[in-house]
Structures are given as structure tokens and as C-alpha cells.
Length: 258
Image (cartoon, rainbow, N blue to C red):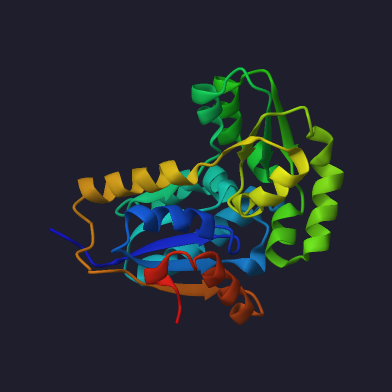
């Protein structure tokens, strides 16, 4: 049995487009609703109770819009809200992104590593359990306060200034970078220019594979010829956000907006 319901994806802004890009590479026939909560960006500076309230309302909205699965494309929301959401919405698969730190343990354990994430992710119990289990004892944890907001809304000059001041100090010190926020893969080029040759670790490709496996197991794969995306943004300028969102997806021809 196949299911032509939607896959709901949400993030605190458009950063989760980096997750969606990986998903549609292997699930091009699915219909997606992308919920960009730019109004509440960034989640990393909010309390757990605030995040739970925000995420609960978003998931409720997505379920009402015929979503057969939910993807949390925000590391902070995944760390702080996934348990609550899975318990409350226990009749629908909820797939959560998480920092790809275990991949360092698996593939590059001996190399010095920088983990970039929001303060909320780094301080979360879920991440600390992961970090304790797979710590290579050569890892710098850096809470990139404000970086997601600059990527979302700032200028090129603001981004370069931030990276030079906060991340430039790791030049020559690290060989791995774990991108612990879905916004950060959008600036891989800038990070490479600043730090030189480094290896990036990003949880999105593995999440996409896991999502496909779950949909296959539950017989929820779409039988569409090709899929579509509906974009929702909570900011005061959703048209600008939508244009940037589709620009990031422009290489995925079947989803490009004409």
C-alpha cells in the first residue's frame, strides 16, 4: 500500500533546506510541506519549555495538513523536543536530525575536530550523551551564538566578520568540522576559504536514508510520478524567504519554481 500524503519538514528558518536537498535526492516522488519558522529563529537561545510549545504547534499544523511523516530539521528542536513530540504524536513517524559527531568516531577518530552548533544543542542532554559516548578527546565545542540568524538574514560582510572573529581562531588546529546546525552547510565554502582544507560532517544524508527506510517499512512511499513542495514561512517577509529557499533548491530541477 502506498500513501500520497505529505512529508512535513520544519526548522527555525530556511536552514533545513540542506536536509530537504538530501531527502529529495532519494525520495523525488514525495510531496513536501516545508515549515520555516523564521519568526522564532534561532531556537538555540530559547528555553526548553518555549521550544516544546513552538514545536508542538508546528507539528499539530503539519498533521492537520495530511502529513504522513514529520522531519525535525533543527538540531536544537531534535535535542529538546523529539521525545515529547513522539510521545504525543505516536501514530506518525517523527525523524530527527542530530549532529553527526558519531561519524567522526567512525571515520576520523584521530583527527582534531571542531563541532559548530547552537548553544541549545551543545547544552542539551541528548547531545551530551552522544558526545560522552563518542568523544575523541580532540574536539572543540563552539556554541555559534547568532550565526544561524546571520546566515538567515545577514549580509555577506556580516558573515565574513563573524567567521573571522569566532571561527578563524581554529585555523590550523582542526581537520574535521561537524556542522551541528542545518544552516551551517550553507556556508561550507566560506568555512573552507577561512580554514583551508577540512572535512565536513553533516547528519542530513543519513537522515534521508533513515527516512526512506521508515517509509518503506511502513508502506508509506508515494506512487507519484514526481513530487512538489509547499513552502510556509512565519516571518514578516515570507516572499523573500521563499525566493531564497527555492534558490537553494535550484539544482533539483523537478522542484524548481518556474
